[in-house]
Length: 492
Ligand SMILES: Nc1nc2c(ncn2[C@@H]2O[C@H](COP(=O)(O)OP(=O)(O)OP(=O)(O)O)[C@@H](O)[C@H]2O)c(=O)[nH]1
Ligand SMILES: [Mg+2]
Image 1 (cartoon, rainbow, N blue to C red):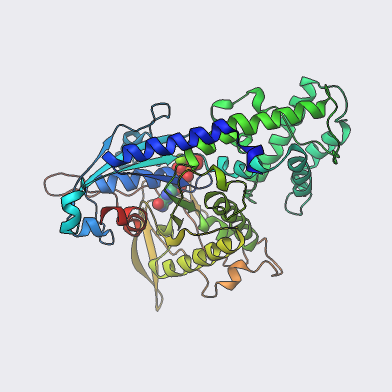
Image 2 (tube, rainbow, N blue to C red; image 1 turned 135 degrees about the horizontal axis):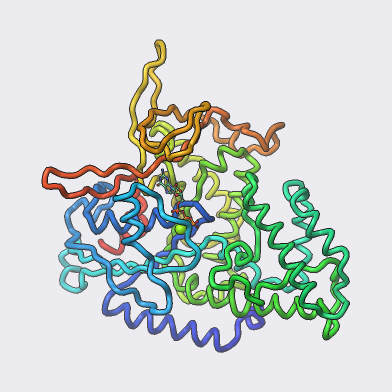
């Protein structure tokens, strides 16, 4: 099956890439870390905090090399791939630290190289190893990842699945315009650019509605329809699934033939290069998820999140017999599934959040045809925007979180101005994790889990300065645990 999906040149190129990667690895060992997550999951904030804490010697007690004082210095170096834009680290940090503002949404791929000079823990390795590790961090829009399964699907498969999904209860009312338009069009008619465009626009509008809506669905290929990057308005995106194709071969010159050809071109020129140049070369991966939002929306959204994590895992470490297996040049050996933004909860709920993510990841691993790699989970906040405190209410003492809500955020009818610090009781996660996943409940689209969880988005924290006026590194929750899992063993 693989030969139909990847040409000889692809394989030769991947093999060469791997060889040259290994050769350079001899001089300065490098580790490629992929940071994945659907939009707004916290990728850009995570990368910025990761680098900032290493460069500025942040408080990282669970990151062994730092704790034992073996890191001599960490600094940014030129990235290895000149054709990929550089991750705008300085801009993001300036926004976070000086303006207390979160970075803007990411539209395209970018990369950064962080080099760490360290002293090995064992005397034996100290004699032989350079004591230098380069970590190449790749940031990309998470939607693009959901395209990878398309590599194994024909245009007929893609069309059939798209129409099947469009009538699921959770999507039915978002897709009628596109389905009605498709029903009017005869795939066997002569190819016509305007028809192709109308169909593609209508299909893209439906996908956007699935994502924008509070339903926040994630299985929405093709990914570039949502996040076109540099392909905005390109003919490569002017295709759409067609109804009622069955097993018929397209008549040359028909709309069916044109759509089929463009779909194949999308796979060859968009999906495969992204996969080959970025995904197959990763060594490690962190999958960031915004579990808080899904928890808030109820078990239906949790099921959707679980499906997305399952799809992602099956792409990264496919089991034997998967069409993706042969494309990998390196093997991803560790994957961290991280629930971000834990600073929205009091620490008493962090363990529960972590238990929920663990359950989700365990089930995704079991469902994906997934082999080999270590999977760990963590509930964390790359940047901690809140502190904890207590508030007395009558005889009760309530655990609260204290921070500066972003201007315009509302709670109990009060609108915040973006300047005032406020104490908020965020509510607790339920003790019984099963309830979070139970979609058989009567009210699974509503806040069945805990209507009492209250969300406000906070501004980034105000950084403290030392007596000498030096700004301290960004505070976090368990970022050190994530670092230890992702790179700790390479600094042993
Ligand atoms: N309190 C808190 N908020 C966070 C944290 N990380 C992310 N956020 C919030 O989530 C938003 C999105 O974070 P980003 O890092 O931009 O998300 P992203 O995954 O890069 O999103 P795209 O670039 O749109 O794909 C931010 O604007 C913050 O409001 C965190 O550690 N703590
Ligand atoms: Mg981003």
